[in-house]
Length: 250
Image (cartoon, rainbow, N blue to C red; front, side):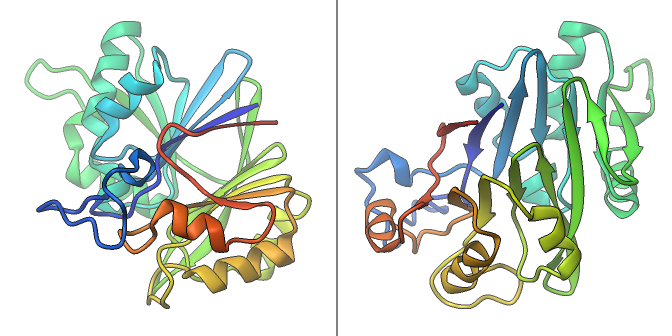
């Protein structure tokens, strides 16, 4: 199974407009971060998690020519507002792209992007919406969603085989830790060094990693405070920052 980091940046990306690099060295390409998203591939199955506003270039850079499904972590703009770029995959295959999320996320997507799911004035719908209710198997990949606290709201993490992906969270309950038990690779949110009301900060994330015990942990959804080289130098063995285009395999 292969996981590609399509984007590992926070909601504004790095650099944030108007070209704010913060502590990040602009000469290091690993500090240039698009909005958070990953691609999962196994045999002939390709699954996308979230449709970031940077989706078009993420797909082109990764050489993605087809998608079997999209899974959403939650409804925030930096994770959903690239949905219109799925049109290219519909046009290439003449089949609607299946998208999965919890009931609240699907409802918000229908409100914001009704034309994506319902034909309008001669334009065909390009996606079919499905509400997640437990594990979903697409091709050779089974996606197991688990609930995460995200400030006053929730998001969803996903386990797939011995990999897991957790972004946009600041709390994990016991059911989430049960879902994560035994994972070998965990891509997980670490927004910045200081505490934040809706995202995990570095020390909180490192505590979770110590409890879950993956062979390898990769930090994502990082702000301009998190310079790649400086952060990597202070992390324990088995933990590293993500960078856009990073490929992880098991």
